Amino acid sequence: MSLSTPRIAVISGGSSGIGLAMVERLAGDGWIVHTCGRDALKLERLRARLPAVQTTVCDVADRAAVQAFADHVLSRAPRVDLLVSNAGGLREVDFTGADLRSLDLGGELRTNTEGALNLIAAFMPGLRSASRSAILIVSSGYALAPATRAPLYSASKAALHSLAGSLRRQLAPLAITVTELLPPLVDTPAVAHRPGRKMPAATIARLGLEAALRGRKAVHPGPVGLLRWLLRLMPSVAEAFVART
Image 1: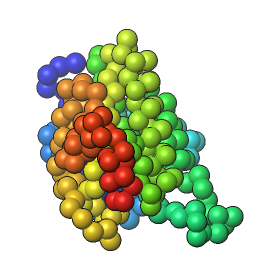
Image 2 (image 1 turned 135 degrees about the vertical axis):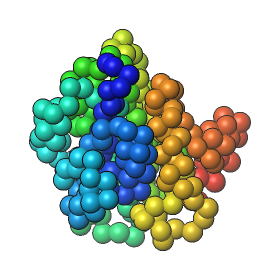
Image 3 (image 1 turned 135 degrees about the horizontal axis):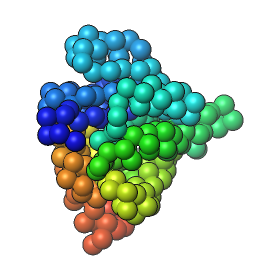
């Protein structure tokens, strides 16, 4: 690949939050960026602001839709240098008070966990076509210690944490690196109702992308870095603290 050839990135959930910040950063750096999301209006607004970014309406929980997205991208792109699995959702489900019979209990697992699997599997041919490529999996600090208010979300992110470790070893012989980004509370529309100190989405995006492009195993921004050490030194104290957040 010539040094003048633009690099190619695929980002799921790129219409808002961390994903949007990653799209903006890579597009600004001259990358060819393909992104998908479920909200057609948000994607239209993104395309109007950044016309070079290629957008597709796609629910990553729908394997056929993800495969169609991948086929569309790979028919135009010779390879994928960076794949970012970012799409996800969080609900606060209380098993003590909700009518569990009426709830879709698998929503987070389908979107957050199965969605990542669908994306990575569909784009594997593009990743293998690059001389070196990278996967960035956006999990959460809750992957290390679960939040009481969000048991389903925490479980889905813990699964991604495990997946990242396994794939990192499997794909190493193919020169495909796997980096896990474990953000703390981030200033995005999804958590606008939550109190507390929040890190800017642009900062999280920068840290995650820099880590992925350097082939690092994981990045633990802000308080998640402290949590990681507290879990080693005082695990019960760390878990009790996270449980209340």
